[in-house]
Image 1 (cartoon, rainbow, N blue to C red):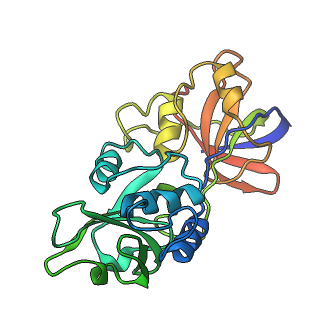
Image 2 (image 1 turned 180 degrees about the vertical axis):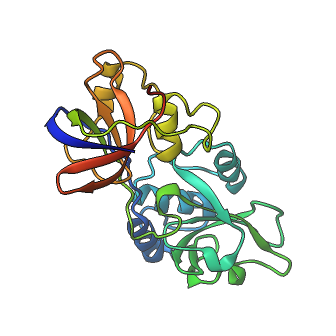
Length: 254
């Protein structure tokens, strides 16, 4: 662990984009039985309805025509920031995408949007704030529930990564071991990414890291770049900030 005293800071912006679960859910509730954007079942199928709702939450991937395609794209990781949550009805939350076998058309034959804990709203046919199991025929089930990665465990908490560029006075100098982490962790950036999974790729030179920086305030959980190394800007992972001192872990130092 190292303790450093912040001297001067040089930063630019990198921000993890949040998804607005509430906005997606509110639109789905308001349009479950038809609205200007989705007036009827013929012109607005369940998947158009679902992706319309997600667009209101600013997911940014446009509209999808079939539930099977939507599910396939989720599984292929085409929607950055979204992860499989479970197949359990009780795990549905606001703004989650719910892929279902409707008991009649096979897997991925129906899609809905989470509008509360264990509740969905749908189109074709319209349902508002009901358990997913009430929207399918006998024999139906949930194929998969997908949620925005940053908010799976607590939708109210937006996860923000801060990357700090720093010139500092080193107070102690003890390198940590790489062994508990992945095999690439003896590279300082790879180690920092093991600790903070939202760290973007392409961080090789000091210029790369300066362009990714977004804050002049270090805090636990952020990645800090030290500009004392003008070629590479050594990457560290901040564990604590206390009394003007920044404490951090790092790899690939002697």
